[in-house]
Image (cartoon, rainbow, N blue to C red; front, top):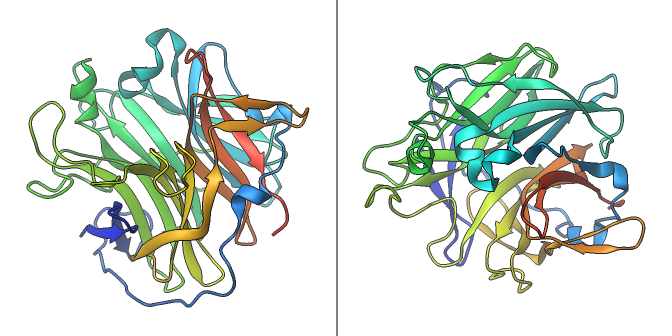
Length: 341
């Protein structure tokens, strides 16, 4: 059962609350238990540290996007990311993306490419052509890799409208990963996510349930469809990463027009007492469209999206972002260290 979560000022996100982390058959039980906050929201904009050169993960032959990292007890950092051939252009993600895997000894990097973990597997599967939007989580003694998958006839909109959220499960981030053949979040005919689902973000709530925030598109004139409900009817935003800290819920989203941060296209911080009703944090700005490198240079970028956090002891330690350079011909992931809070 998917419901809408209000992020204030018209921003709507879908959420799914379930008892188990991996199965699409778990009953959804919305929970409204309030967890009162303890102290101010993290001022992430002030806590982002200069970025070392080793934190840039790029490949000259591929567009790199959508990074998500988990660390195992031996200290190894396991990074999952999307990639697609540079020859296909930036919009080629919807027809040619695949989820790949890299490792490092430090959360900031440098990361070394290992292999593709969710390759194409045939059009009889709902993720047969494309895998994208990875989010990796450790729950209990298992690892869960949530992602968007699609199949299609090669046309951009045909693939876009076949997007569905899936999950793969493993005993260790190195794999092997076992994909579910059914979507973990399918479309809901006649509802707000009639056409497609994508962009999953998952957290474990203090009450033991698991909450997913995702994007959906309603029915409407094809191929575009209707309203996108992972953003806002009036104030667009997308790409949320959600987590629980100090008795409250937080989310970083892409503020498409700067309606929340007043800083143009940027990343914004939201907070919530129960994970359902949201408002902009007191200091909503997380990052502008620029990178501050350790050598003192400030690099303007064309896109800075898909925020994901690596948490240590429940607190933000590294902010992973996908970056499209000003020239628009190469994208890469960056791990931005976060200072002591």
